[in-house]
Image (tube, rainbow, N blue to C red; front, side, top):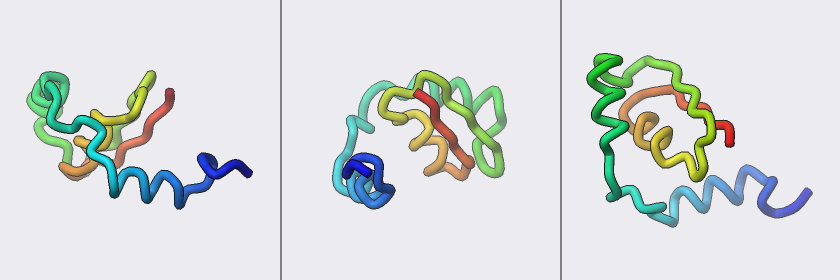
Length: 68
């Protein structure tokens, strides 16, 4: 198993890098308004790239899953 396939690699990477979280949050604002917040919601982000939007939703209480 390569190092990038290990969960520990990604756990550490998400904890130590910002991944540009200060960038435009328009999608988050729109989704939050439509869904009435993220708490308790299950989110599937398709074509997620780095998964920044799902990370933001998870930080606000969603159960986020990503597929790139």
